[in-house]
Image (cartoon, rainbow, N blue to C red):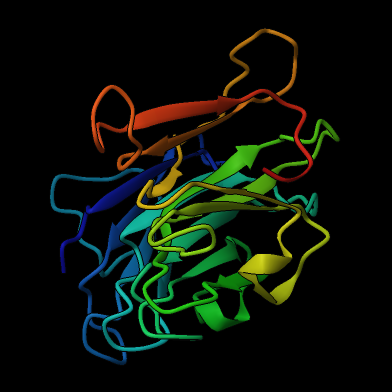
Length: 239
């Protein structure tokens, strides 16, 4: 199952005074082989706690989606009073082969199919691998609302495997295409610009989140030596 391939700290979501944990298992078998799963484990967690006793769980849509490879936990994205999580399936074939898909799901209610998520975004092209990196707590346009950010290392927008980060605000719901994002940042040929930190940060102390993206194929001090690029907020449009 590869239970524990991704972890997220939720805080005390259920109000019992104990912190909760989100666990990814990208090779878990639900209705299909290796569709992957994400498990919400509530405290207290004992020595023999197993994944068959989660508070809530989600499985992928199709075989070999590998849901739970990457996740980001713990923000009220749509201001409805309930915590949401970001769950990635970078091998999902929803729009094209290995285009990838990212789901924003609510912790309200019982186990639900990811296809009924508050928001789910599909990669536009084959081998984009949308969801190789995700982040939920950013507020890059300085409007006070959280945004959902997701990286796709294989996009070919400006060149082969340039990589793109797409950012959505909470005006988007249901099934949406990646290219409808409020903000998109794209690298150059072979940059693979797509890696996001788990949490955003205000790096210059101006009170606005700054966008940090890694590109392991960027030509820095040497060919494909890699680099981290910082975009100072607030940010709008495409970069």
